[in-house]
Length: 463
Image (cartoon, rainbow, N blue to C red):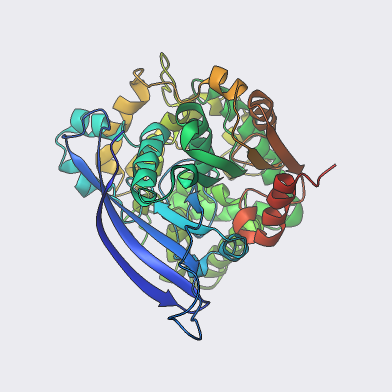
């Protein structure tokens, strides 16, 4: 595979003794066609900055080992597994300090289609042509293509390193962990070690089996929500009645109906997620009680909590992230929902609470969003597609020699713990820390504990 072309590098010193470089690379959209269409990728590198007393003295700087970070959810809140979210500046990432203190330099990559890396939006997709051309384009935005980007970048960044130092470490959160396991399957020669947090993927060829389990987890989180905030049972019903009585537009131009309101449940899987949803329900209720309408600040809170307009890639390829050869998703989330009666109780006058939904992307959510609405034909093509390459090589994973350290969350609403443990067993040498004390976004919200757990696994100090 050809190395990525480094287009630009600009370096700045950031408070916190951080030396941050902003890098742009060029890679092929299809790595099997090196001279074909190109994508521009963005990443930030960060290392410790030390101002020497006497810059003219001392040893020449040594090559610091690289740690690549692969993002898996939005920068502000968990939104399930799938690409779409960009990385944050390193000074805003709590876990960077402990890794920098261990001697790593870190690369925070905006994966293709996210952040500043050839961003996927309705307008940028339209440049590809009609729905068929757009769907074909998006088939190159899964873990397989992302990992090839990573290998191309690794070759560029380590080109002047001694050969024995050219491997790098990777840390994957959520979908970023899925990418790590694909990396292990296809390019283990580029890896020094692998860390994952809530990111061991199921070894399946479509999302049905995962959704079967995750809908149960979402139902449990609904039960926990209404147990913590029983007053919200009636509040949600009252809001549902108001939404049914008039057409309500969000500041983004999207439609706020009961389906959109229920999508707030995608926040249930993170630390403080129940409280965040309650805060929005409280705001909406207060508006209705005082004014008999919903104010712009409250509508903006709903808008920000369901970020599909700014993350169309997530909505378009969420189910495709699970797909392997010979299978089609056929809108798995919609098909599986009918098996869970608790989610079908949407009558505000009925005796049962109205359940929020989770990370799953429904076909019916596309017309509610001004950014997603024109992309529904594209999504339909992707849902029917069967020409997905395999993502994981079980034989390679069984003979793996790369150290793997994984933190798995029992109460993870986005990555099923049972499938994660099965995957851990399938990877030779994978060490796991399994806990019910943290949720899916613990790497961000409980950074010190997660990094400590990973480091104990690495140091082999866990009984």
